[in-house]
Image (cartoon, rainbow, N blue to C red; front, side, top):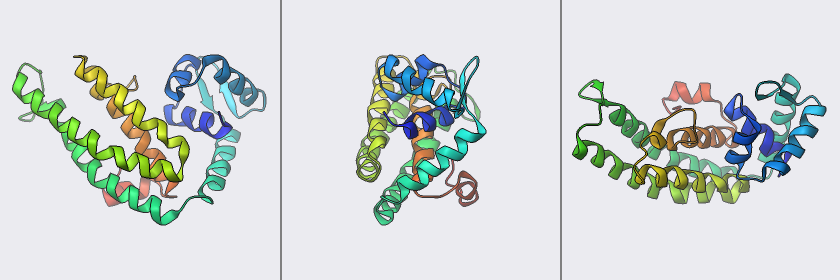
Length: 201
């Protein structure tokens, strides 16, 4: 696993335990620990109560991401991101409707209402699959995001609704947010610019 993948995963999480980092990367914990040790020793990661990226690590990560972008077909990535934006609007609306019903917190006591929203989630999932594939053709490390989305969706379908939008796990919403961030970075945009255009989540 690459230095870039580890540094970026930690930055996306903000602060993360080694176990959670290995889980989100889908890698062996011992292998991740070895990379983390090297990055900590070189001052790129800070290992306290949780791992976080140091100021030097952010500079190094930005350089690695810039080098990665040199090998990206920018037109192909831009096309994938444009498709993602459209699906993202529907996903944001879906999450809002899951959390609120008639302007009030959704108590999830109306089965038909929740089932209709989960049907929309299935549709979003089907639509995002080819987008992740297209983006991964340019940035191969992004391929893991579909598996992460699928895992969250499977948990939702098993009846654990927390896997739709709970923030402290790799819920569908958490993974979606991180995928969105990855696409923004790969397209050499910023979340601030996307927020101004209304596309940031």
